[in-house]
Length: 150
Image 1 (cartoon, rainbow, N blue to C red):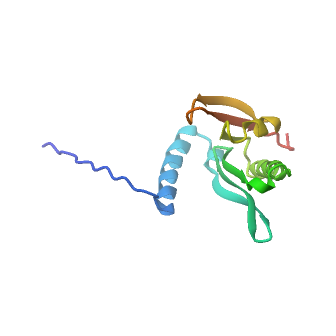
Image 2: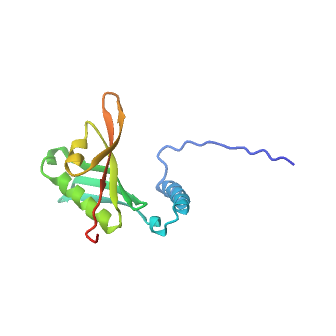
Image 3: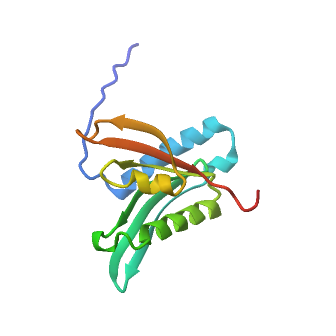
């Protein structure tokens, strides 16, 4: 007896937070099963916000998994740039990462954003997509963290 499987493909614009969480959990569960290290199970998604009164002046989104912290974005309001807010926020991100057991921080920055900022603060360029977006480059950056316990 043969069974025919019918698949459907659905495109969802702006998937719900629940769907995103479910999909990330499925991938994480599979991946951890292949790594063989229970210490790799820890994951956490968080934001760090810098406010002046009630006004948001700098922020980051971070996702910790496999003992690495993916810095998904770091933003500083244009009028606050050059005042060390970005540097202080990045150092706080690195401290959070260490507290959570991360051994590195990684992310990307476009040429028109701040790759030199990260390199100045000890990040290494570990990859690049040339001419993306057109006329620019996308830089992948990583910094290994030194724990005060080692």
